[in-house]
Image (tube, rainbow, N blue to C red; front, side, top):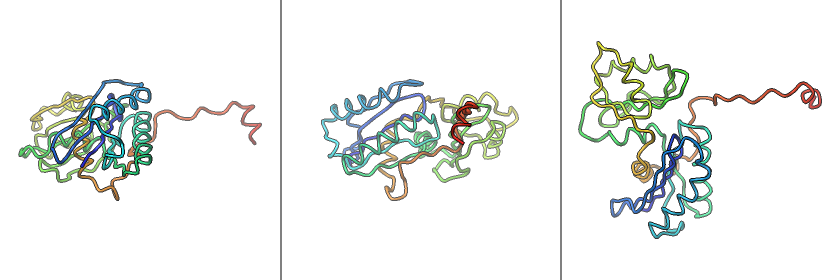
Length: 230
């Protein structure tokens, strides 16, 4: 199976092509960036596909991170995945950013629970908790940092995500301490591809997984404009 993976959910723009039969990435590229995903993504995808020496119609599916993350970044990645999937007549599958973070740790034969955490700003985080074997312990949610830290009840965790250090810095001194802290700016694009290969296209749809409303609110109409629209 050939998978094109895309990630623009957080502070990176990344793309990769995975050949599951060969068990390897044929090509990959990633650039750290806080903004500019819209301009960077399509040229990056073109370079990755050229490096893999593949036509888009050779792909079996397209995988994309669907959030939580930057609202603008998510729209860029999901729109690209849907457009390419439509043009190539292939399915597009969506993977949560939290699961992509956890995938790098789960399955390492370690009993520690895995806490994926993403900075949601305003003293909140997006997070989820899975056991060392990947089974769910706490479903994805956006919560105050103090509430996330209550996850110490599950024992010494492996923290991963761009908010891993935030949780580690505020972890209770009298609680079991984290066994590892992987403060990654963005998920590993290779794991996004592998998760995409395992996903069910019927149920794992490429649509936004926000968990909360955007911080920005629509500007109020000027008084005259309000009057004109009434």
